[in-house]
Image (tube, rainbow, N blue to C red; front, top):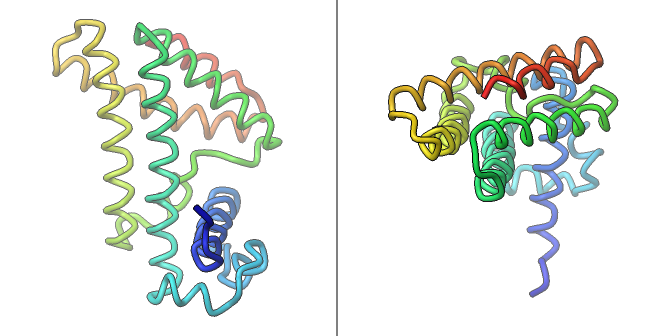
Amino acid sequence: MTVHAPARHKQKLLQSAIRLFRRQGFAATGLTEILKNSKAPKGSLYYYFPNGKEELGAASVAAAGKTVLKTLEQLEQETCTAPDFVNRYCTLLAEWIRLSGYRDGCPISTVLLEMSPTSVPITNVGQQAFKSWKEVMIRVYRRDNLPEDQARLKATRLMAAIQGAILLARVEQSPEALEAVAGLA
């Protein structure tokens, strides 16, 4: 099945927005820069995102959130214990951030830090993304026979620790914080 040009343009716009928002932030990234980076025609931006930058921001958070969810679900299938899951996820994150030259962070946090709760659409998709990630982590902890309330608490702590470790890794230009979180499971 061939991908039609307009569908490619939408994906290019989304991928460019995700990358630029993650690295520069929502406010510092202009639509012109996203168009230039994506090489998509100007008309395609408003065709797919008629409400402009906020709609593109919400779509980019949703798309990036789904990508992370797929990674977490794959790790859930490939690991047998919570410690193995956490270790493998933190190792993946550390390598990914290192390969970006410590320019990349969580693909949705930068936008959410700037736009929550000001933008209801962006806040809503951010909440959905974090909820879906947390549910995977809860399942991983439940698989280790933790009661629901303890699994939920550990998943919340893990998510908070990972988000903080991603920030520290970028600022310190070192994977040390993510390596430390890998031992928290």
